[in-house]
Length: 120
Image (cartoon, rainbow, N blue to C red; front, top):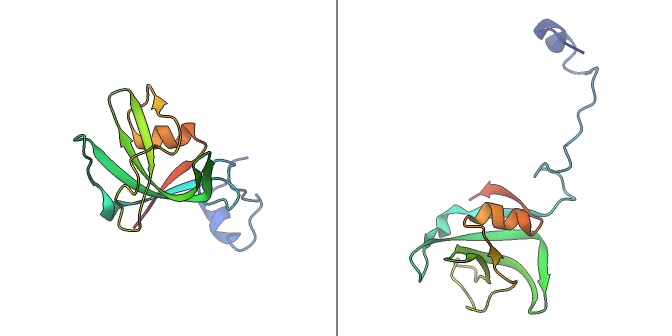
């Protein structure tokens, strides 16, 4: 169905088409979301950039439950470490196995089931 601009403006308060969030839309409250804290970007100990993310819901692993993580790309893949509130690695033992063959944080988090969205 095609709508003209004038039709949309006239009917803006009562749209003909219901708007539904896409299942992968980060605005949905049910989907796992990783929100990056840009102010905490910095070089990691191995020279690549590390990024700090808040996770909703938390990630659960044999090591525990974590809602704040640092994601770092390495030679063999991307690693996920627990983070402190300042965006530093709290423990250098990864939370989950490295995401092998992936060298960027967003793709690694997608592999873990999270949609990445920006935050400050």
